[in-house]
Image (cartoon, rainbow, N blue to C red; front, top):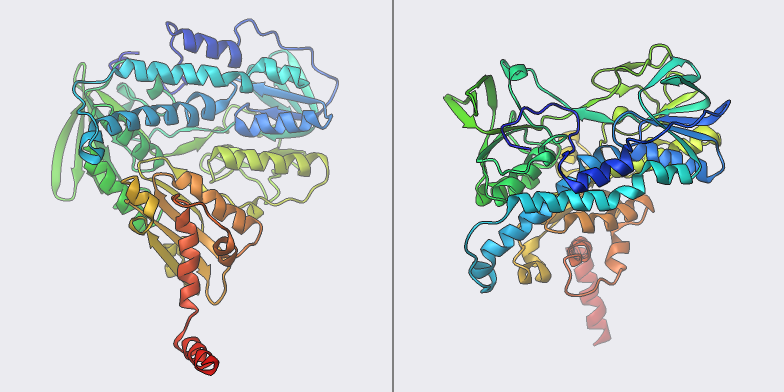
Length: 512
């Protein structure tokens, strides 16, 4: 897809890409014939993203009669327009960056010339197609799930209509996810733009990409495209990138983006956008400065909007709104006791892994009278910039503003041998502990492999293991995971108060 082509908000697959054709054959097969419905299902799931797929597979695996409805592409955002394509592009961008910097950092060979942007994007499409059989209509049919491709519409408290088929259920699950939010900007409706749902259809590299939004998607793609050779300007509405993360973590990421060449503007107001033929003009204001930016690619990354409209939720007596999505209780049950919801359509935790674990809760709660609570899940998040930002639970900023008595342990990456050997010393590991104990309340890791390392903290919090348990765990040397053991050591050293030291001194004098 040319960068100048008008782009809508529906996920786009290329008609001339063999890999995209393979993908469609798996997740939206043109020849698919919907089955004759059962008289009644134990579970009808609307939406075949991660939440819906896990719900359907788990329930069918336990012997339940399950129907799964999808209007677009099975696999949802994660496979088609989210985790899979974005991380493939990010990895390609990191490789380009490492090649350019190898000589200065490691005495590597000098790199000259440009890379092949279209080849990097085609690699992404190949990998996406390679992974798609796991989410395919055929696989779920073989698992015993009745797969219906088409629009699902609630027509009663216990029934969904898909075309001419009426699916009656004992329990229903709404797993329709969310879509990219399109902000209200003067002139925007008359212009082409991209979101995460369409940007991965690019085959030509933009000359200048303007990214609107300083959250995870905006930061990840801004850095990826600048490393792939595009000039990038990031427009952030607030004063800090990654507003859900700590000030220190966001500062490291902003420094990394600026180092790579991203121009970051804060407190930006976009007054209007206008059509300049093959270009788009944005009139922006930040502070006392007014500026007109000209771009051939505009990416909107300002958040997610739950997919609640067009589902007939009123007919099912399901309470919802456009911002929060489906209203659910802590057991993920909606205002209709027969109907549950999972994932982005009902949760502020809009992550693939959160939808996965919520789906497991719903299968227990909906089919087996379980009482599992979503609030009991320990949910990490990762922004896949370079360095990455991974966090879980309480941040240091939360403890400070909330007046929670805590102890904070911070280990700079520069103090971790492997990080120095890898020339990856930007960042830190910070653990928030309940004051006077070793109970972990939260953690933030800013490092190249933060996403890989946060899992150990999540395990400790889930299993109610304190920081001392991490300190007692032997970590291989040299690894960046040693930052966690060092955190435990630093906490333990704090317990060696002057009084304790004096007692030890008396003890050793007694020994002679």
